[in-house]
Amino acid sequence: MLERGPAFDAEPEDERPARAVAATPALRTPVDRLRDPMPADRLRGWVVTLVISAIAFVLRLPGLAYPNKLVFDETYYAKDAYSLLTFGYERNWPENANEQITSGNVDVMQRTAEFVVHPPVGKWLIAFGEHLFGMNSFGWRFAPLVFGVLLVLVTIRLVRRVSRSTLVGGLAGLLLAVDGLAFVMSRTALLDVFVAFFTVAAVACLAADRDWFRNRLADHVVRLGRLDLDRAFGPALALRPWRIASGVCWGLALGTKWNALYVLAAFALLSVAWDVGARRLAGAGRRANLALLRDGIPAFVSLVVVALGVYVATWAGWFATSGGYDRDWGTKHPEATTTKVFGETLASWFQYQRDIWNFHTGDFINHAEHAYRADPWGWLLVARPIGIDAVNNIAPGTDGCAGPDNCIRVISGIGTPILWWVAIPCLVVALLLWVGGRDWRFGIPVVGVAAGWLPWFQYDSRPLFFFYAIMIIPFSVMAVSLVAGRLLGDARSGDRRLLAGIVVGVFVAVVIANFAYLYPILTDTLLPYPSWLTRMWFRSWI
Image (cartoon, rainbow, N blue to C red; front, side, top):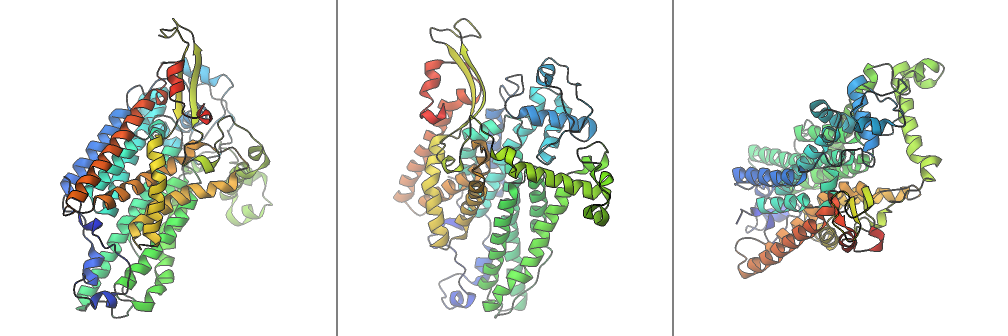
């Protein structure tokens, strides 16, 4: 059995004042509780991480280039990526561009700039795959494959750090590896797998920053030669490398899609709350509340200002060229206030951002309809999956269809239902353990799901899609894994641990079996129509 580490001791860490802790000799000292070391199985932790990531890669790689065509919104992002690669900005394509590309004639771009409604990071990453393997289905899906696997890897590392358990971290990675939505998004040239990766990476950096900061506080107390801070505020520690790294990741997430902004805001606040709790635990007393400003302002700079700077830098291709959309707006509007204050180039860029905002909030999108519209209330229930591609009514004797029934090929962006449904009560338990049990670990999945899900309800007048929920599932599997770790307890739990291990093992086996059963509808596999229908458990899935 893998090392569990100290994270699942019976008494969770609250943030009680240090003097209350010190008054009870049986409890650990403030310095001990601030340090909270990582598991000693560092090598084994990386072996587990890499093995599970390799499993995710092996699952996702076969048939990556099939179907050999642009499916769903690949028609935007794969072509935008190739345009960025060729010209540094997005150009328009002719109406028959998809057919031309499939036949191998890729250089058919028009000379006019295209209005695009998402920042360029994800498209630059797709372009990297096209640079390596060509403007073909494998080329434009290669980067999503890589980042889908990296999403599994960074989730393992985040959960291992938070739980102090290689077993719990590995469980989270394994569950994510066999989630249907994460699987499909790792094999499709859309942007969402990139924003999910950078978001989880940013949160992982904040979790590392929490440990870094608390260790520095502990070091300071030791240098003082005291039991605690004795009501002093403690060192400022404004320059925090992990928090800056998080800001860079947030900038890349925003440079892929703007919806990462809500998650940034939520975790920035949570990070500062961690600072207050750490200083209170170290013995700062009421002065711990000063962290809201004295730690909060540097946190704002490290997270928000750094993220904004990185976001602006992600538009380097647009700045470096002269043909991009709105690129000459400042020249044409010299009387505009932004042009007078910021100059023509930045004024043009600000106008472009305004145009993007107006698109996402304007009448056109708010009055649009789509067959696969999925309102956010049903995301956690997997109420309405997204149809990525479909070839219906394949007659017997055609395309390998043996008959007697007609056959079908589909790619459905659907989460592994058993996993998603079990995650709902686990999230409720996590909320109770965070708020009622004062166990900080469970706050991360709760905040992650809430910030990635609840803001979408304000946009219910426009078509929303289930694949946006790729931002949710890493935090959902984190909740499931932390609750499983709580059930397992420590190695001294005896029969309870054995029974909990059986329950968790059966659950994982059922999730894997559920994923295997859905695999044909995730991969465009030829299915007789009745076989496909047995996988459509609800009318809303059709």
